[in-house]
Image 1 (spheres, rainbow, N blue to C red):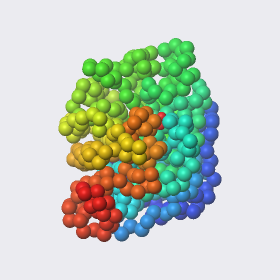
Image 2 (cartoon, rainbow, N blue to C red):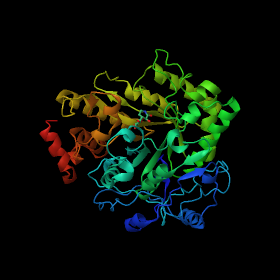
Image 3 (cartoon, rainbow, N blue to C red):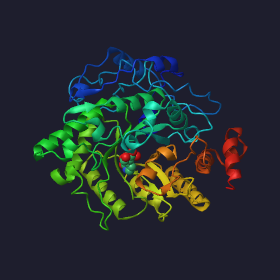
Length: 477
Ligand code: XIL
């Protein structure tokens, strides 16, 4: 109901996967600033947009008895008409006309309505809740002994497309990737993820427009005046948001702006934007992003905001003030990186609810639940059970808070997750074993979704859920 894709029209019931797989990936590569977002709109895109207007939205299909998804193993590149941003020259004009922007990566034939097997997470989620995962690559993967999973592993991409209805770039939209040199934008990897989502009818969460981490050296070590920094930031935000206008449904506009001290003070030394330009810059970042894509939902996003605590209070106060001033803030994202080594606050839902009461969206944006692991990289049975319970509690909270619109898991396989790399000795934080076999945690989430939507008997009786019922029985859950 609230995500862009639910407003999308169904232009083609069947994706011509073969044609897409063969479509020439016209990856933008490294292109100078402005040029990337200033090419003329392709005529075909304009025609498709006109076509779409005459069609009635059909919402999400009934998943019962849906045929399997087509073969997703094609190259994830964009179709070769994907050049302009559909808005003519400049950064996009910033018209405040929701519903008008056509994603330039929409496949030939029109927007794809996703259809998921019933025996998946996305397939049993309510219409207004997207279940997401990441397009893994960049960041810690660059130091690993395997190539980036998203661009190199068709099995991985298939898995993500079959299970999930939303995708977040794990690293490819961060500053160090997108603007590796001053004024030189590189969208190659980011475009591929966007095209993949469009081909598979998935939503996109854009991560992140401003952050204190994973910024390029030229920025962090540069010697810029205030005016120059402001211009650099504005150019980046407008260039990136306009490129993906109509494609990216939600943006993490400001990531992790508060610290972990008792007062949860603002990150005014680590965050270059807040340090050099003051916290007032936050209003501008949201405003610029909104001008470039009035349809996109604009979020704050942070960790350690998993209950009624000081950091979450700071967000609540800041967002309340911004809303009063008319700043376009639309959402609050709780990353939800949890560890079994620490407690878990029973006010998780209450926290989301107070943002909901402000009339804004909430989202679980990066959940994983880790714990100490043994020589087989597994948590103890007690911790595994506890982790599954936390996952389910958070999902249930999101289901019960009306504007909570996505639940994104941060990783697919433990061997590729950021957790073992970032928290030595901890792991087992995702939903699948190394061969994509489902962990009991996966099945508990599936059960939570089915029971919420259809009641306990649907879970007990439907043959679609046989595999998970078996896994839970074996695990004694
Ligand atoms: C992590 C990535 O998963 C890693 O690959 C990278 O090395 C570091 O960043 N909060 C965030 C995410 O907002 O961007 C982080 O992602 C995880 C914590």
